[in-house]
Length: 242
Image 1 (cartoon, rainbow, N blue to C red):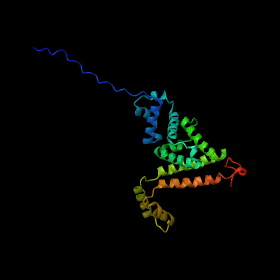
Image 2 (cartoon, one colour; image 1 turned 90 degrees about the horizontal axis):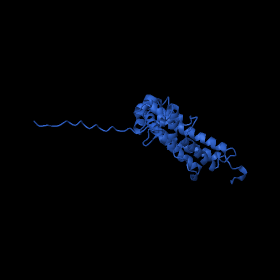
Image 3 (tube, helix red, strand yellow; image 1 turned 60 degrees about the vertical axis):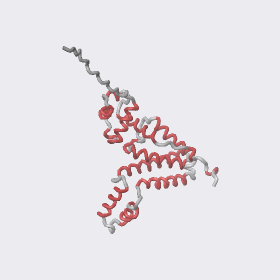
Image 4 (cartoon, rainbow, N blue to C red; image 1 turned 90 degrees about the vertical axis):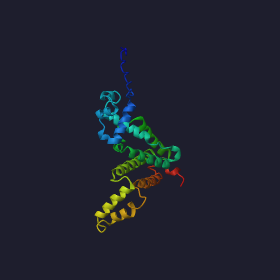
């Protein structure tokens, strides 16, 4: 009789350690969730399930949903390029607006939250300070800088809201939508809509996103003209070179 000995128990598989929960990891998961499903879908329970922890683990780092939203807004502001004062105010505002639109299209849920925080984070404050600083260095008065900042942000946020709400996202989809609308309306009843659809939006190479820089330049042109008036410039009219 062969003694086979006592069978050795199977070695237990090592359990995979979950990375420790931190404020940064919670906000990263919240950002992914908001981008995928919208900010309305962001709940503490859903966020905890996504991370794979109990909800209490999140409360230790961020006490409520409002704190998470403040953190998310700060992350979005941190992704927007800061204006460079050395570029001159117009170039700085142009570059910053392009970056802001790109970031907000990527995080479209954030548009309505960008300036809604009572306790803004460091990146948010740094961004606002840099924009105001570039305008002030560029010659705007305190009030003029405030007016310019408001006009630019209103345009950027409004354009993004319109862009992400459009029923198309590619030139092919735009053509399909435009053709359907033109087909269903008569040129006699809606002559101007017909001509802008056929003679502009449906032309090869057209992209609605290209409208952004055209409108932006119109605003910057206006701000440049305003900078020559006393109410907007930090330089008295008597000291200006005409």
